[in-house]
Image (cartoon, rainbow, N blue to C red; front, side):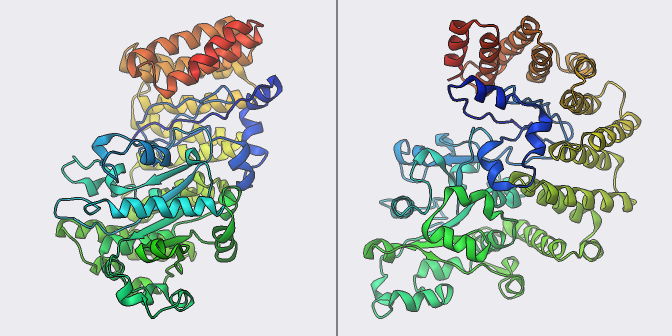
Length: 544
């Protein structure tokens, strides 16, 4: 599993604003813990998830400490396509993954509007999702631009990203769909809207006698485009519709970004909107249709496991995801024990992990804690569950308690995880180091900086011995120690550690990597505190 990257907020000119952002973790995670809308505006996550064995993570700015590890992933490992790139840089309509126009979903410094594009490929035999002349690409852009003009979604292209399979999944992999095995629930969970473009050059043959209000009464059954009818038969398309309706969605988080009919839908339905936009709507200059969310009972009637597939090799993947849907439904209905009896502890615990990650991404930290506690209980009751899995769940729980500002419980939980890990591994194992790092973060949040430095030094010793001196994990640990020295007011020492971090990052990641920019930013803040304003500007400029 990959390390998460914490994000930083735009600084602004005022020193007071910079100081506010440099608040302690306690201030950041307790002030608005479950007020998702406020969190979207004011707070950036400090603790992206990572799997047991993933590298330490650092804060993007010195607004707080790093979160080191736990079996969280959040949006890590998921790529998205910026709308601006889709418009300006794509040479052949919907870009292929090999064009490398996507970026990591966790690399942005602000809450963006995320659109999941759910569609039936027009040329699966090639394979290519569009047809000659790129009609789907044109529909997609026209729909988005229409919603922007109407104020439904952000008007700024830089505030919108899309997830499109052809662009965001490695198409050169031996089995591209395998990438979805662990990510489907998380991908849909991070998105604020689902959009289905429907190419239909023969729309007049079925729509000429239908008024819009007639179609709106039953879009799923009345919309007569062949591509739409085929969409309802396709296993992947059905699966995406069900995930859109079933995966947790937080209306408050997206409210600041939407308006018009999208706002009305979200307010009324309390659900993730799924819109259909076809050639008919484009030609008639009409707005997109909103689909009624598919509810629990529809899963039996429209089971994706029985849907059509271009490759039967995907059948087991579809059935696995249907199982995830069934488990998530039972969890939502407070039937976790029944889910374990029906599907087994291993699969139920894994789904609980993923649901917890979705809740975290949506800033629902109390709900995240509930799911993690359930996962821990399921694993502890299961005689087949490994101690390593239990320890990993404890690590996650400790991170959630940190977000909620419950630092004493967080520390106890991390200590429990540490004791288990020392029994499983040697005392100098990287998992032990990461738990030391998590504990260091708590001590830093509590103002016990000497203890934080002591624990970070243990992390550094283990990482250096394991990975060598030039590894990015070592660089991140240097950065974390720099944060502590800065809070101690030892600015020269902080700069020394930031410089060590910077040199390794440039060597390992290159000059243009976002993590390099974050360290430049940290150094700029320290130079500003030292009154060396020209130097501060120099490093801020490098960060930009």
